Length: 89
Image (cartoon, rainbow, N blue to C red; front, top):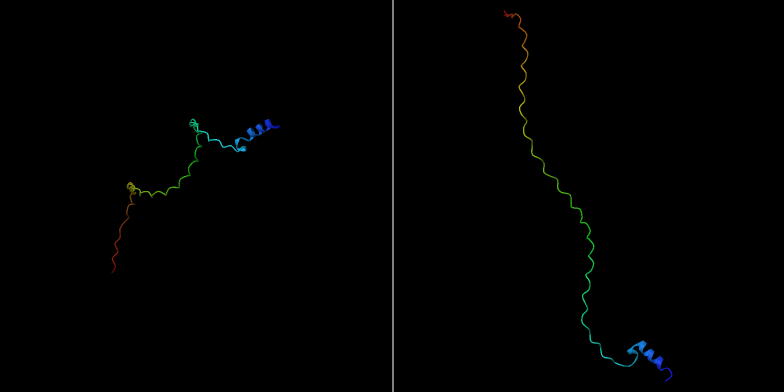
């Protein structure tokens, strides 16, 4: 065969599927080690602002004020004059 080496290389390059040969499936190996832990997630967004509260109740009525002080004593009146009694006829 003139191209035996090239044919062998081509067969190896293309794999066994290029040949009309059936091969048994490989036996699966043991399970691999567990993967590394993933990165921590990002922080969540800030929450929305709360609603404005209702107005408060009206305050109670204030107490009644104290009674005022007694007023000052007035001045003495003028002395009276002569009194005339008029009798009508």
